Length: 321
Image 1 (cartoon, helix red, strand yellow):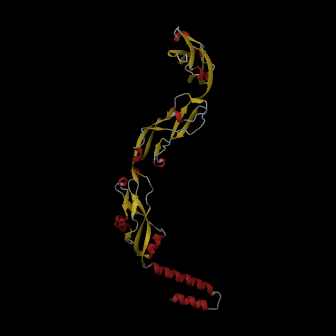
Image 2: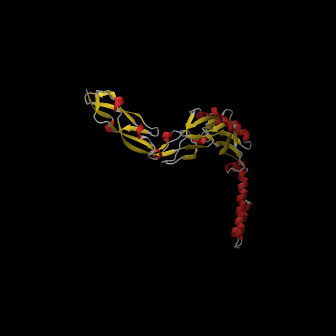
Image 3: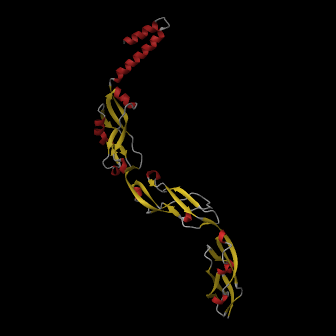
């Protein structure tokens, strides 16, 4: 009360320079009141930080762990003030004996542990009902890597003309055992580049789709993939039917020429021996109703990728006796 009497006396004084004294007096009274208040005991709720004790190198956290627990405490105002503003906080340590088989912790079961670690307070009860955990045992395994050529985006009229070389051809993956056991023994590597029209030789970051990539550690991270590509051209060619070798003497071909279409690398187009393209008739397919027999391609140069008879040349009109 003496401090407030001094303030009132200073305010009633006619001297203008007493305002400084007034302000200082108010501050002194406030500090005195604050100190007096903080020395009293209070009951309040606190959000207190927690950490979990377990061998982290043996486990993987699937979902973020709770980082605080709400408690009701009795304590001196000074202690409550420091904890409220996170001054000198040491988190409560919660031991986990079997993290992968502990999906949750009931809040009330932590009361004794919290009281032991917060001697400056009387912990009345734990407000947090349940702490949910998602921790899995860590595991690792080696997987073979392969590239699916059909999934590679090649420019139109281009084709892969070599084996796909993958180096290294395997990776070691470490992560939650629940994911590791689901992975197939052979994993695909995906090439994101599009419209590839030249020899490919690049390091690709290996990713596992359909699973939580952030939980998995892949060694090595990058895989080198190499293959050749070449442009293919389409060629139409008219060739003679091998009549003598395939058609009996009682069947006569009306037209002994047929049209074939094939694809071939542009670089081999000039060197291909078209005489190696052999088309034969299949007399056993004779259809007497429309006087036709089916034709078949029996031989062609190995440089040719695919070959087929023109739609008008798949059947041959004949005269038979």
